[in-house]
Image (cartoon, rainbow, N blue to C red; front, side, top):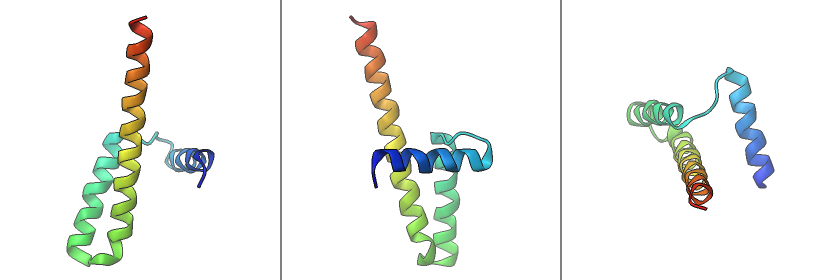
Length: 75
């Protein structure tokens, strides 16, 4: 999937709930999904793995934005 496609998906998920997707929401969803896997089995494992990926991507994006800000502040 292209970067635009991923952005569109993320925006669609955000629009569906009316709240932006942030690391706190993803971590909360990851915890709930981990409980589902533990209690109900591996049928929920793909959801857990997807959330892990989404969280890692969001954290990487936030880290890159922080680096951009630092570069701009330092000249």
